[in-house]
Length: 313
Image (cartoon, rainbow, N blue to C red; front, top):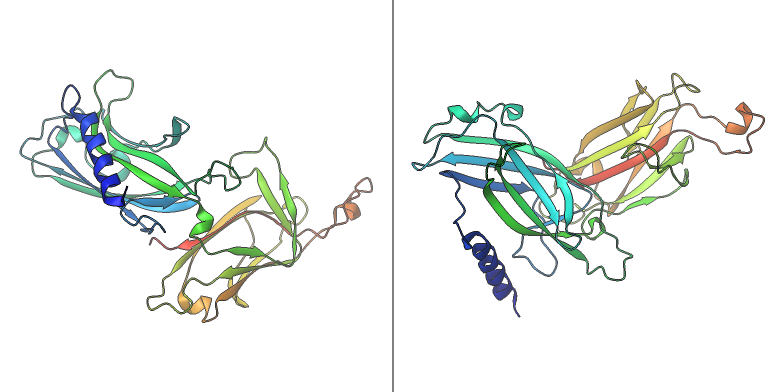
């Protein structure tokens, strides 16, 4: 079965779902969605494709037609990413119009057009080592309006099956070289802080340069989430360098920090790889602070997360 037939069948199934019984009523609200960055699937370029461990911009547009029916101001937007295979929610991103600076829905009138963007993070959830993993998973993305804690019928404005592929198949590879200790975990820690690696005073990453020998080089977003031992190294400075040039130097205000940068093609250079250094001007050895400790490691800081993908700004 070729790709065009598959897409046609999927479209028919969705239309049948909305045609069974009462036709889906959008209350005269036209809706358009654009997602950036756009990812081209390796074996099917005709489907909406995302990856896990990815920040995306979801650009929403609502256009009120002549058939628009007045709605009450309790309506909120629901954005649901539903894992079909596991039959459970992957991501729920409900929000109010007030949160994006749009007037109450009760004051909307025919001809109004409303636009806004939301940055959403698709978490890491695919398991490349699962024997049943096919390289992607199908997710239902549904967007619409509903009134919380009410039996009022939802207004479905968008429903589409999307394909989520493993981050590793599209993202630049980050290779942890010198200056990194083994991964440690704490299942009881807060989300996003359950896994980390300690650095020494200087840790080096080698990152693939996706701009190498391309005609249209792009900016990339670098996000680093880390932890500082403020009770031990109160005034410790953290230094980030790209290809040996200082990107940033700062003293963390708290025990954790998160920094985001736009890395340009010029900063990445013209080679097929570039270096990211994470350095500190202070370090400690646990066994020298606590006579009962057998930990003789040189410790700089904890790094929970390094994100490096094509920029959506």
